[in-house]
Amino acid sequence: MKIQNINKTICLQGWLACVLASVFFSGAGNVLAANQEVITDDGREVMLKADGTWEFRSDDRFANTGDGQRVRLKADGSWEYIGNAPMVANQLVRTRQLEIELQEVVIEIHEQKAQKNTRVRSQTVFYLKLGLSPLAEMPINIDKSNLTMIVIQDNKRRTYPVLSMQASPASLQPASEASITIRADGSPQWWKNVKTLKIVFEPGIFGLSESIILTHSIDDVVKKKVDGFKENHSR
Image 1 (cartoon, one colour):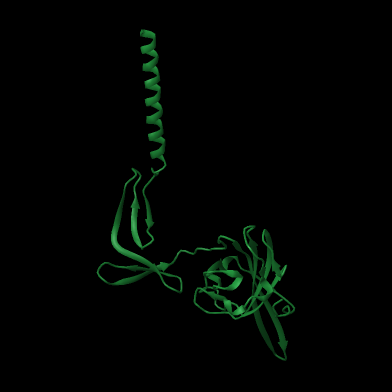
Image 2 (image 1 turned 180 degrees about the vertical axis):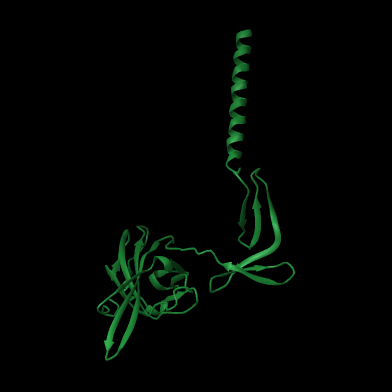
């Protein structure tokens, strides 16, 4: 009987140790090495404390302007600029049946001399990869896509007209991928003021039910001089 009691005591102690250990390690994931400030989705400033608690830093809120500046909205009804908004690039978007990845953005520059002057033209080229899920019920005819459903802008809201879209293959079958090249007329002129370029696919194109926005940092854009531009028509 004593041996049985001892065994029960050992088992009970071991079980308690396991329970305490699991509680400790599950809570450890919420503990920070130091306090950290974050901004909530609704613009409130919050302090995440190292002891696992949090608190609002103030009643102020934060917002980003369309041209990429950060604004503090004060509780007294006033506001002020506080610098540039954080630059976030979104180069991959997945829906239930479709994956669109923005792989590269290239600005092609063509210089043409005319008498004493030099005429400079540019085009912005977006290279994308489009993947269709095996669960898709039908293929996507990329060559029949409406170019008016594609919008290209910079963070200053300047729009660049879409000239062409070329795809290989032109018809995307389920469980396959296609490479897409989209050309737009022009490019940002004042690089210091432009931070991002974005390409928007409106509902309807590629069978999308809602808009998809892909962004690319201007610092990662490749610039190269060319002898001329490729043919501007959609295949």
